[in-house]
Length: 201
Image: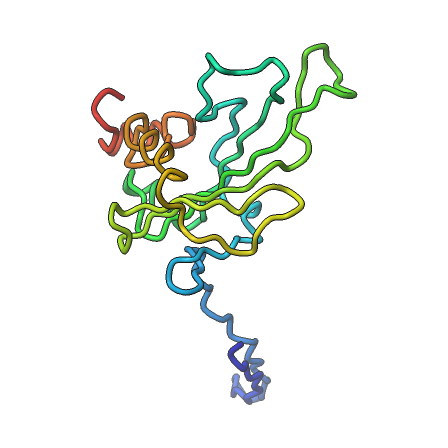
């Protein structure tokens, strides 16, 4: 951490003296982009819940509904993005390099609801991330921090079969670049205004 000096200096004002107090200089805000170990291993952002919240969905997964099981729990997916990238998108309709999305998956619950059929979010299930980084071959990388109770502090980028489904879906069905802006109600209109939506949206 940068050492900060507090100083006092006399300032002449009219016929008298006052003391001007130098307050601690604020350190330049650290980047809220990806924090890597070994170049590409993404550190799990511990403060992601303080980032910009984009949207929440229910059961919006890669699972084919034709193979869904009635016993499969319904899951909420919450999407957060680092604040500086959100502000950049609001200006340009595009995601800047080093954008980080965090996907938080939580169980749904109906216990103690105030209305019949109501659902709310409960326990954490898993945590994933997507990063826009020009150093990767296609400009994006996907990460899996694991399941609740045994989350990893860092994750290497997914490769091979583990990421094939992610890439296919994020290529064929997304509205802006590799992201599901069509499901982010605060951003879809921005993309329309900036002309950054893919054809068909």
